[in-house]
Amino acid sequence: MNCKRIAIVPGSFDPITNGHLDILRRAASEYEVVYLAVMINASKQYLFSIEQRTEIAKAATSDIKNVKVISSEGMLWRLAKELDADAIVKGYRNQNDYAYELEMAKFNEEHYPLAKTVLLKADPKLEKLSSTALREKLARNESIEELIPKAAAELVYKFYK
Image 1 (tube, rainbow, N blue to C red):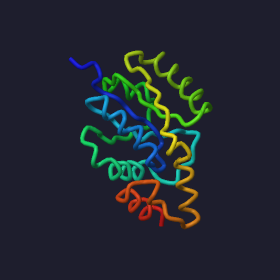
Image 2: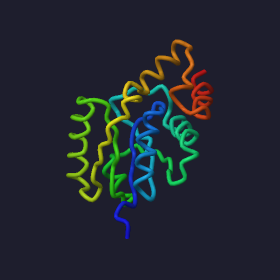
Image 3: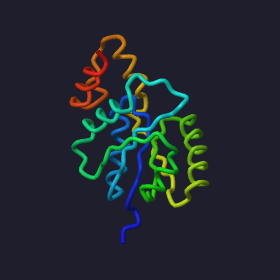
């Protein structure tokens, strides 16, 4: 039996970007089922509601057959346990991201050790890309279509108005 069955790729995804999708596609090539989990971080202010972020993520991932988009307002380790996940896959762009993700990995593995955290380095061509950069372009009325799939961009424009 393949031991790489279920992975979770969690994040705020406010909104999802091509950088997130690169990490998701890499996870989808290694696991049978990948849940993209749109989460809430109480310390963040969001431009889009969790329902809107989930809908945008579904549009962005519709071509990846083994990906299921869900949303969760709870703790990641609890979601991992509920889904019987083998892994939590996170991307990082720089040393600050890496250090933060290591702390989160330690916390999650202390609470649910069956889901190991896998950290993937961002593609160098995408490491400057972030949801913040996308939101800044939106605020300046600049095109975002090079940062996100077309179907997802259409929803972003619809929800932003």
